[in-house]
Amino acid sequence: MSIRILFILLFVAPVQMLVIASSAIAGGMKLGDLCRLKGQEDNTLQGLGLVVGLKGTGDSDAAPTARALARMMQLMGGQMATDAAGRLDINDLKNAKNVALVFVTAQVPGVGAQQGDQLDVTINAINAKSLDGGFLMLTPLLGPRADDSTVYAMAQGPIAVSPDGPPTNGRVQEGCKMESTIRASFHLDGKITLILNRDFATFDTTQRIEEEINNLSSLTFGDLESEKSTPSSRRAQATAIDQLHVEVMIPELYRDNPIKFVSFLLNIPIQLSNHSTRVVINERDGIVVIGEDVEIAPVLVTHRNLRIEAGGRTIQSVVAMGDKAVTENAKLKSLADALNALDVPTDDLIAIIKTLKRKGDLYGEVVFE
Image 1 (cartoon, rainbow, N blue to C red):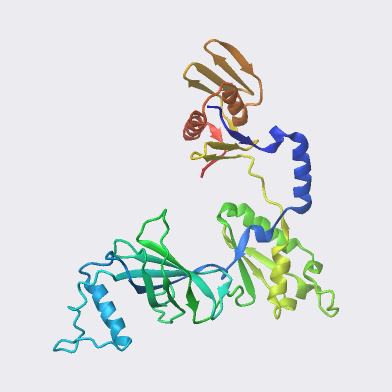
Image 2 (cartoon, rainbow, N blue to C red; image 1 turned 30 degrees about the vertical axis):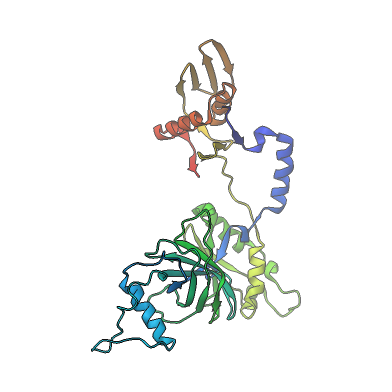
């Protein structure tokens, strides 16, 4: 099997790389591509519900299920027997096989949800064998905090079980109706907090974002229609907190209209440091991405019937049936070229990279996906 390797475009198509690089420098990545605003995150609503209408695959001999069913029937006006202490008698329901107690969850998107919005619901059985054909009874959904008893939504509806998934998990499409509005606040005390995506979360990136925002002219955030505004009232001030967070003070001019300021801010172009010293490996798909500046120490690699030497500024390959020399800079890319020319499998290339990294002979970052 031949090696499948993706290199930085500089090695594959120099002319095309020049075009792409020119476009990237002119536009660059926008700040909104790297981060999100604090407060703009998903929230989970959750609750305990009952599923009825199962075909004998519900909970068996489960007292909690019987108690929950008895309580629901009582609330709906059903005549339920009680014991001498006035507690519900669940003996009549303990053998119910078509009922299951389930966990019910719904995800509120990062932009929030308005009263009346409908969301999808996920159902997970606790003790039932299958939820196929079941119907979720009306279930109140609370927030993720145990000390918050607010009912944010109600869920109900027929359950659909995926044919490819376990029968104990199911979904109700648009089965959750919001009873309260959940707003996603994005500013507090006159400032917003940028949270970087994990792929870009480094001290260098947050420092670059801080400098880009603070170095912008006050005219960038200026309001052309406001001639009375001063430069100080239009200037944004950013502070990098750590490798994940950057706090930005909202300029005085935009205190009453923070949305306009956020729109300007998230469209700022940001030039990031390149990842040319990074190696990304996807073992499942057999893909290796090698940065152009990943170097290796002088080493001797032996692989079955061949020897590959990387020393000084050259890489030489010696095969048992003859010699084949490749003279290039002593970089990992050159080593991969030599292995590719000798039809070394991808799994072997990955094993060699792992060994080089473990020995400390690979000067770069190795990321596994």
